[in-house]
Length: 286
Image 1 (cartoon, rainbow, N blue to C red):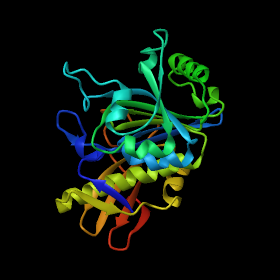
Image 2 (cartoon, helix red, strand yellow):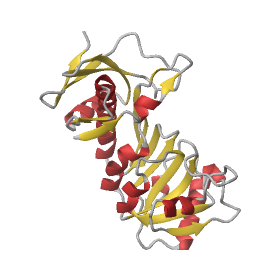
Image 3 (cartoon, one colour):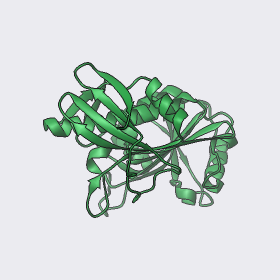
Image 4 (tube, rainbow, N blue to C red):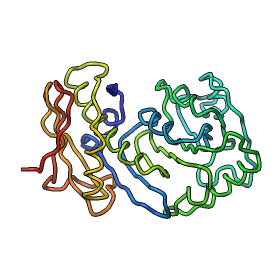
């Protein structure tokens, strides 16, 4: 069961001046043995357990921007000071002027134990830019400089992990909503898609019940795996929502969804959560 609050990404984000509900979006491609995913809408904290499950024992936060922690001049605190506020012990690796700011890199990298990620992403604050990657536990200063060089020079569509021999997962979040990630683990994309469906259904149930949160079962791997086998790109919107059933209308897309794209005139499939029995099913759209 996944706990979904009313302040989740699907609840607090909207599209356009009309403030239309934010859709579920998912796109996947495989390149050079790496799985690349573009998805929405999910806060980093809502995916942290999925990232931890495939990451090495140590992670590096390489980019961090937030309005949640500001100094007396209304400037964002340095990442190391934010970690200290959160009680997350970390190693701080300062970047030289040659690297800081390139491709959004922070002035310093934070390196800490993977199991501290839930404390770091504790839900009491939000980062509008956050990028992290797993690294070897004994990563050296020289290796972190090499990582900065790769991150600062990588092309937009070029697989990152294919240039980093030991890293297994890279996550980048924008506005604590849009998700970009790469993974060597082929099961992670399906797990992310299942989580997105759970978050969308849970946000609808929490709003319907006017409750702070709802607890929602995730679909089994068969459901997202079927969707990915059918098409690489999907968009989903809520259909009928009651206390007993939540329907998500899904349409396959020829290209990844972009902000401003409308839902197609016809859905291809409907995924339905049976709240009482805790089961999901998928059916063709009538």
